[in-house]
Length: 420
Image (cartoon, rainbow, N blue to C red):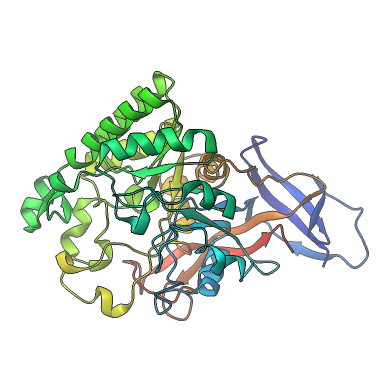
């Protein structure tokens, strides 16, 4: 199918492009881009895209799949549909499936179900430790050969002897290595970030040092080994400072926070909505502001979705007993656009950069880009379209989001996957 997107706002962070143009797509490939195109095949569909935004496909650093093991939460097919509906052309699954991706035989469930044409590419994180238990190294070289994109447990590792061994062992492998930093002993049974709000709401507090002490220790290991790492789920102001200092010392570190930690903070827990029970917990207002500044200044390289589906029954419990996590693939772009671009007059290019270009680079992938004669891997977004978040509009099998039943502004119109 040939399409001419007329007068669309084109965003391309790689080329620094933010302009209104016509874009011609022929057979799934970008063939031309210009102010007003008049030379196109006779069978081309002309589409009026005034007011729409066209950018490279979005890339998610880490999210959870229900399949295998918990298909009632999410299947690979529903995950693909949710990603496509949210503008994501690439998603990367954490190894916390059942069984976990800790042996070279486990990625076979994905190899046996390759991504169909015109659907998001699925990558897999391999586990760092067997059974994600943090005790023994997984079969790392074999997993690398099986095609995992990189390594993470997606869970805290507090055995620093093992962490150092992992960094030394993985250095020649040359794949991304990601850590979620949290000292479980310091976190205790905390379900909210320790501070005024946790006390006021009567929720057990998780102190910021549970994260920052682990970040500091990991950065010391990186300084000793020289192995590049990615710090995931950064949630505190002090962690941003530590990462800024590490980058100033030229340590090979990248870092990400999640979209929810940019939009919500501990004050929002006054609703006791179990869908706001997250790990790490939502930060205090000062943490949230530091995360926003960290994204703007580049201290935090990327924004991850960390889509974590749970069933209605999972979340229909008291806040402190709820399993942590929320869905987000279909919600992140419109809600971040509304907050950063519309309400705070932020740069659309910067937002697209942390959702597309930089996540791809953190994964050591060539980022999606709007280039002539390149397959169209891109997202068309209408920032003015309103829709209600409910069971009829969501593609995910799960509904665990605090925006359920709300009407929000901004929606993806179409996603081209670059593989059709």
